Amino acid sequence: MTLEFVAPFSEYRFMSRALVGCLAMCVGAIPVGVFMTLRRMSLTGDAMAHAILPGVAIAYLLSGLSLFGLTLGGMCAGLLVALAAGWVTRNTHIKEDTSLGAFYLISLALGVLIISVKKSNVDLFHVLFGNVLALDRDMLLLLGTICSTSLLLLALLYRPLVIECVDPQFLKMRSVFGAFSHFGFLFLMVINLVAGFHALGTLMAVGLMILPSAVSRLWVETLEAHLLLSLLLGFVGCYCGLLFSFYWDFPSGPAIVLCLGVFYVISLLVGKKGGYISKITQNKHYTG
Image 1 (cartoon, one colour):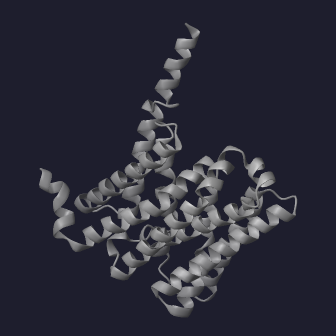
Image 2 (cartoon, one colour):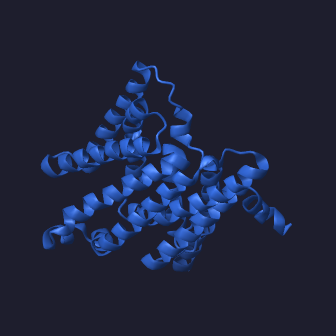
Image 3 (cartoon, helix red, strand yellow):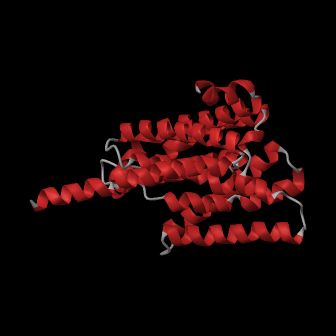
């Protein structure tokens, strides 16, 4: 029985590579996802995931399925949308969610237009849903590089990001690092989404960033515990998702996200910090 949980990763190289790639993505992306939920930017991640599409489409037309080209194209498109939305927010009366929503829709439409006009045979299914079981050595090196870069930048931005989560106006008034931390965080979000789209696709990458953090918020209160539990949940979700994908021939990306989704639904019911049962029990206690 135990072998069934280990054998796919020890006997098949594509499964061990998929697991290593998922773990690298978890270490880089989940801490960013924790700060996204604390800053109420969960939907921003979804918008940015769509915003990288025109960059990927243009890179495909210029360089084919070049790993470097697709990564650079997606990163440039994502950063351009993030910078444009940030500039509009800070220099006009338009709020950040509105400006980001506008730019990501323009970017998404541009990507679809490029693909349609050029009649490219770019594999949209691969872009949207990825294929973690097809990770090769170069892809793992890319994921490892982005993971290391993300952790280094997050360590540099950690203090201003924590302050901004608690009191964004205080950071803006008292420190020159307000804008620096905001744009630095958007950069972190973009590079992790670009890393995620290679393996899980643009639609599934956001799930790996947001769901573990959403689950852990229903169990713990401190930031340190939130980060650690989110990472653990991400690891377990990836492991279980890959096993389901292997034994039942499910698409790997959706299987991983659905495993995390099951954790979320269960936590909504029984989570100790604001779950449904906990809230009912607490209300009854106050009533009595």
